[in-house]
Figure: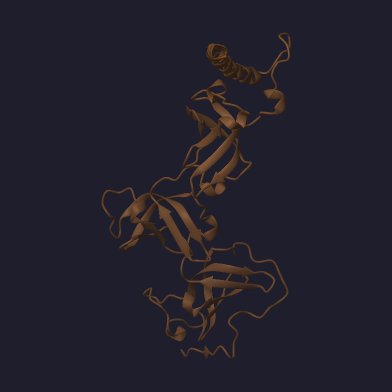
Length: 328
């Protein structure tokens, strides 16, 4: 049986455009079909599916032995069954693009930074890391310095868990890490964001709050108002509080916070013993009272010194006058 070979000049690579019609049920992206070759050319083959024609390019064809196809007519002819997957649909032109290779389960849009993948297979090992197959648009790289295994993996090994560190369709690059990243990556922390955090420790410069980031955020004493405030009067270690980000610098690994819900009314001190004040104001009043007590004690300690100075000056003046009288 002779095989008709049609050159690209005589036949377009895809069916001619026709009025938009609904695609047959089941013809969706990545769906698998067994179609029939209706004609072949130097660039590929036209394939009839259930109610629609598609085109498979020579670069997306597989020989019966699984190898590459260099001449379509050597492997396919009109009437042959062919196993294909749908890779693109243009309902307006009633066009379907096909591929004999199974499409990857994951697309670029599925690769979320921080997302976890399980049971990825090592397919190549280089000086700087290992490339793994995760059934995605291309193999991903796991650098050796981001691995947790004691020994370097070998081709064929399976890594139980990796996390997406980089995914750039433009650069055609996927990077993984075996070190679990923080729940809150730096790129997702913005000024003005509000988080529920836990007080990890309290130091002289403020309280350190765990919000799920790589580093704890600092709730500065200055965020409660002027003066030397003891943040321990407002929060306790282990307490959960709402905080707002006032500054973030991923390069210096720094997050500054302020306590959410504080306003000028809360910080106002009582004007009289009968006036009710908020718990926050009471804590501030206690802190400032401590400052005044320290200042009063310092002033009291300074009074004898001032009095002694005045007595010494008076004595010197008296002696000076006596000297003048004797000399006269």
